Image (cartoon, rainbow, N blue to C red; front, side, top):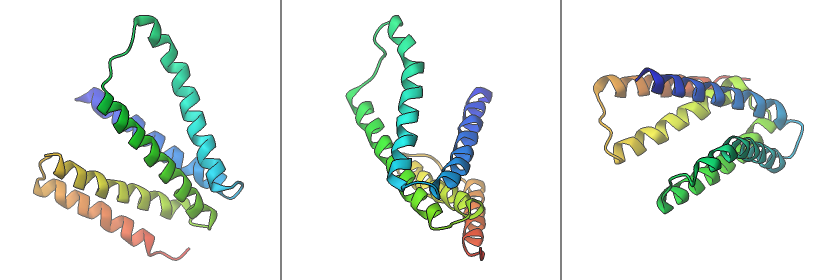
Length: 142
């Protein structure tokens, strides 16, 4: 369990840093170019990490998993492009970041329920508090 939480914490750090970097870059380039650079960088770094694994044989995968990853990649392009556009329009990262994270929480909560995750009152209340906080931030003046 601890290992999983460390992985999630590192992923959350990456998401937070992504928000900061993409916000700073947004005012200096076209959103689609920024999205492409972001994704090319992720692809290149991933390829560098992946290539040594090929020496160990062909990695295990399934065709449905490939299509799910393609969906994830398209989702990242969607996020990168429109979030860059929002930040380019002047949305402060201190408001955009919590809204992005709150919206993501809402999406994964509903997806989790559809996929069979259990919802306790504590989880539901925690999610509601996060979403309320994001909504309050979204309504703040610049």
